[in-house]
Every structure is written in structure tokens, then in C-alpha cells.
Image 1 (tube, one colour):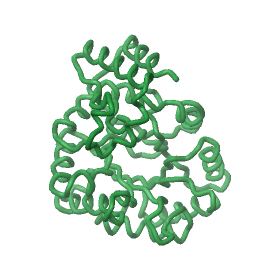
Image 2 (cartoon, one colour; image 1 turned 180 degrees about the vertical axis):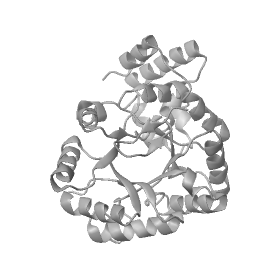
Image 3 (spheres, rainbow, N blue to C red; image 1 turned 90 degrees about the horizontal axis):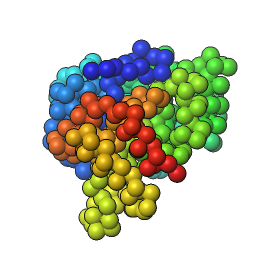
Length: 316
């Protein structure tokens, strides 16, 4: 399996990242272990989570995903074979948020404890914090790297201007640089990344790890009307795509999938993987069947005609 470089670090990863937001949410611990075991057995090693997962679920406090993942790492004894990414900065309640030195120092210790490890391969700023100077955040990350608690750092949900300023700050002060960006990017949501962020990532050599790679399931073709959303936990995310453009994208996915003897989900992920700036899309699975779709997507190579058809259908 092809390995891809993450920025200019020595970390090399498979072209697919398992999104851990489902651990402790739509998957309980037993089911999470089953998905993780199958993911690794298929030859993959890149897993992403965050301290805030899944505080957005009533009754959860945050940290549930990291706790499940930490229990799995301990049970399997495979920490050295996993590329582990987590994030900090989102609101954990009671003022626990942002990218200040005080909070990051506490947040990393909390994550390490829940993950039952002494280092994080990729530690990411989950969201920009305009109230904290970039210098303070990057100096804190430098300390964490010096302490061997973190190997590399990344950004998530940064705008192009702030991302560029952060990288300039690192270069000017001789501090560690963000090696990756997690942007919202998929076949249905292209504008935010392609307008300005893509140019920054290309110029600066950042790895790109798009989240919502399947647009919360819309690009699987499962949701084609309001009726299909009944009972779905992702209805609010998907509803925005149920319009003329969204249905045009699904029609193109159907056509390419039929030509490739594949499925819309595989084609949508293969389109992302084919984008030259993308290192590894982030996608989740809640069943072995869904996981098989993710794995097969990495084996699907779309030709120029298929890519052109998808590009045209998804144009703004």
C-alpha cells in the first residue's frame, strides 16, 4: 500500500485515516474494537480523534472517544504500530477551551492519560483561537515536542490568512511548524478549501487530511430525499445537500460507479484521494460493510474522464 508523507516530518501514513468521532457515540466500546481491529488488519495505521469527542452527545462529557481508543491500544499492545492523531482547542466546558499555554499543557496531559500513551504522533489545534497570540500557542507546542509528548503538530479549521500567519510565525521564531491541515473538503463541499487554503497548503508543503470526506454520508447515495433522513443522527449535516447541485453530484457518482463496478462512496473517496494536495481523507465506519467500502476506495483509481465528470457535476 502506498504511504504518503505528512508535511516534512518523518511520519508516513496510508492514504486513509479512520475518524474516531464515532467511538463512544454511534459505536460502543465493543463495536469500536471490532472496527479498529478490522481497519488495522486491512493494512492501515492512521487514526484520528479529539478530546471533545463526543461532548456533543447529551450525557457525554468529552473524552469518550480517546478513552475507547486508549483501551483498545492497551488491550492490543500495538501503540508502536499506530499513527495516532488527536486534537485540542474546542470547548470542553467550564472555560476549558482555546490554545493558550495553560490549557494546552493541561489538555495534552488529559489526552495522554485517556489514550494510555506517553506520546501523540500528530497533535492538532482543533480550531483557531484568535484570543491567544500565535507565538504563545506555537511556543507551547515546541515545549511539548521537546518533552517528547508530541511528535508533530497540525491545524484544523484554520482560515488561509491565519494559517499562513502561523507558518510565518514559526519560521520567523524558529518554532515547530504545522505539518498538516484538517479542512472541510469533499466532493460536495469544495469551495472553502479550493478558494484559498489549497494554495497555502501547496506552497508550504502541508499534508491535507480532509474531514467529512463523505459529507456525513450524503456521498454514499443513501440520502436522496427528506424521507431518507428519518431517524438519521446526521440529518442536520446532510439536509443542506438535498438540492439541485447535490442531486447532480449523486447522479454523476452513480454514473462513474456503474462504469467502475464500484459504489458512490468508493468513488467519492477515490476522487478525494486523487486530489494532488490530499494526504489522506478522514472517514468513519460503523459496520464491517462500511469499512470494506473505505478499504476498497483506496484501491480504486479514477481515470481522467471520470474525474472530469465529477468535477463538472460538483462545480459551484
